[in-house]
Amino acid sequence: MSYDIRTQARLAAQQLAQVGLSRDLLEYFGVDREVIELYSRKEHPRWGQQRQSKSMAWLRGPEAVYVVRAYRIFVMLFSRNANFEKPVTIVDLWDWYEVYSLIYPEDVVTAGRLWGIFQKVLDKTLVAQSCKECGHPYLVHVEDYALQTCSICLLAKKQRRKKR
Ligand SMILES: [Zn+2]
Image 1 (cartoon, rainbow, N blue to C red):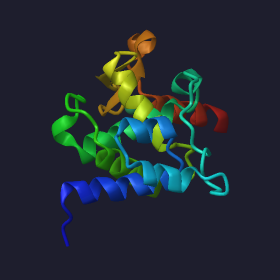
Image 2 (cartoon, rainbow, N blue to C red; image 1 turned 180 degrees about the vertical axis):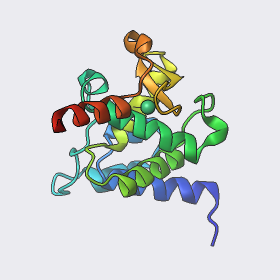
Image 3 (cartoon, helix red, strand yellow; image 1 turned 120 degrees about the horizontal axis):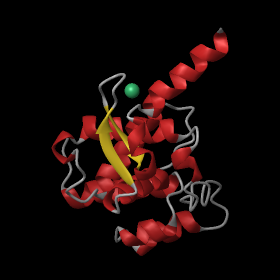
C-alpha cells in the first residue's frame, strides 16, 4: 500500500504529535490545526513530554553519543542528503525518529532534539568529519573540531579505562 505525499505527511504529523513534538514545530511544518488541537489537549498525557531542549549542553556532554548515532542513522536513511542540503520534511523527521527509537530505545532522544541537530548543522554549530579511530563519519561541535575522534570511540575508551 502506498500513500500519497499529503497522507504520509498527515500520518507523520499525527505520530510526531503523539510522541510530543512541540507545538512550534508542528506549526512550522504546517500541520493541520485540528491535529495539533487533538494532541495539545491538557488531558493528553504525552503532550509536552518531548519539548525541544534549548540547552546546548547535551551536544557536548556525554549525550554527544546521541548526536553521532542520530547523524549516522540520518546518513543511512537519507544517503543522498548526507550533507543536509535538502530540508528535512515532517515524513523524514518521523522516519528518522522512529528508526532511532527502534535501534536505541533507551536513549533519551526526542524528535525535537533530532530536529535541533539538523538546525545545528545548518547554522554550522555542528560540523561533519571522519573519526580517525573508527573511520566513520560523525558530527562534532565546531569548537571540538580538532578532536578528530567521535564521541562513541571516546566513550568506549573511557569505559575501557574504567575496567582496568
Ligand atoms: Zn569513532
